[in-house]
Image (cartoon, rainbow, N blue to C red):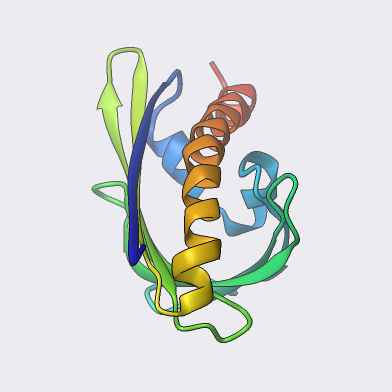
Length: 155
C-alpha cells in the first residue's frame, strides 16, 4: 500500500463561521479530535507555513508525535489545509483539507485526507492499520466537533 485516500462530511447545526473557527483553533483540537491527546506546541498565529505539534494517541495504539504545517487558510471561503508528518523523521506524509459550506439549518463540513506512505514499515504495517483507524476516527471526530461547536455557539 503506497497511498491512503478518504473523505468524510457532516451537517452541523451551527454557522459556517463557528465551525471554521473551531476546526482552525489548534489549541482546541483535543476537545474534538479523538486521536489527539494533547497539543505540544502551537504557533503564535495561524498563517501559511505555521507549524504545530500534537501527541497522537488513537485508541488501542501506541502514541506518537505529529507535526503539522499549514498550507492554506482561507477565512473567506472557509478552507483549511495542512500537511502532517511523524515526529520521528519518517518521510511519509498526510495532506488534510477541510472545507465548510453553508447548508440548510447550519453548515456542512467536509474533510479529505491523502496519505503518502514512503517506507516499507508504513506501506506494509502502519498504513493498513492507519487506514482502518481513520475510517472510524474521522467520523467520530466530526461528530464530536459538531457537539463541541453547538455547545458553545450562542443561539
